[in-house]
Length: 458
Image 1: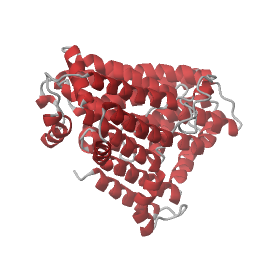
Image 2 (image 1 turned 90 degrees about the vertical axis):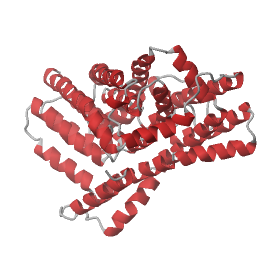
Image 3 (image 1 turned 90 degrees about the horizontal axis):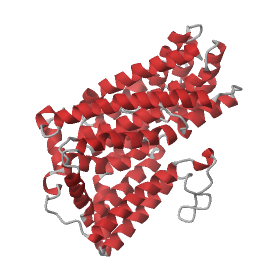
Image 4 (image 1 turned 180 degrees about the vertical axis):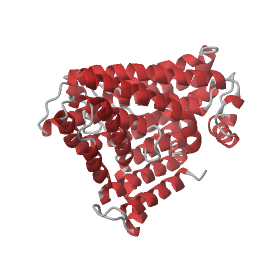
């Protein structure tokens, strides 16, 4: 299997060729194909820079030895109970997904969780799916997620359709909990098989070698390592960094909470209004603070920061190249062409058929437009009135969009978050697809059933 970069470039070429056979859109040129990765990098600059700075931050933390010592201490305390980490982590991440669309932000956790899981006897697939399926279940069952729910409601309102957000919250909440149960059951079953038995893992021998090189072997903490006071302070600051990140991303003002209205003294934006620029600045600052608190010399801080950033430069680049596919679709008008044709095909269908078919449409559109807010803006003014004209519930269309975006971003190579995550976890794309298609298929069927019932009953 070729690398992720080759897969994405080939996909870009295929999309460009397709545009040459559709008269209604602008055909892609050779220049569009050549510039797609560069334009994608410009489009993904925020998240790519965040990944690099996060890598530098982790490099400084690793230099202190605090993370390895902490993992050893946790492993000792959880001896025989390591699997408890999985449902707890998945629930917390899914909670972030349903409330504020926690997806790209999870990139920050993959290296840490993989280190912990490998030390506990699991593989990197267990770690990756704990985070990604947790996020998928939450985003699929979005309740107040501003990136999909608020953007969709705003688009429907602009089209003259009033929405009942109580319906969205109830249907989304039910979908979240049931899909969380599906996800955590799948991951726990796989984790039990893999723990202590590498032969049960779906990772290839080459992937295992990469995982051991990055998260095991010489980097694996010794059983008798000492967790010093300075290292404990470092871990407190480390944990605080991620707590502030989460607090900074939750749109508090939209919930009527104004506790953080005057917290913009560090980044010019209040907590709750942060995005990747503010997160990047925050982790840069905390990397320096942790290095100084531990007593590292200036040169050691800089060198360890550069080493950590270098470890994730491939992740940043694959995110950028994956965004290039979306850029070429947008520039040629292929995304809007498919949306218009799909809406025409759904005219006059029954509620049951409409729900299933519209879900398929959104699955395809989510590949073309990975941004849930962007997809909501362009599609809801078309799909919402279409549902209403058929006597159906437009609120369910909002749930369809959330579910499709969540599921597609768990498997499509055009998702920068996915490709970056599996690169961090040293998992090949084909291995990931072989592993993840079953739980995603189960979530898909379950969600369509829930929404079909909702469309028929409400």
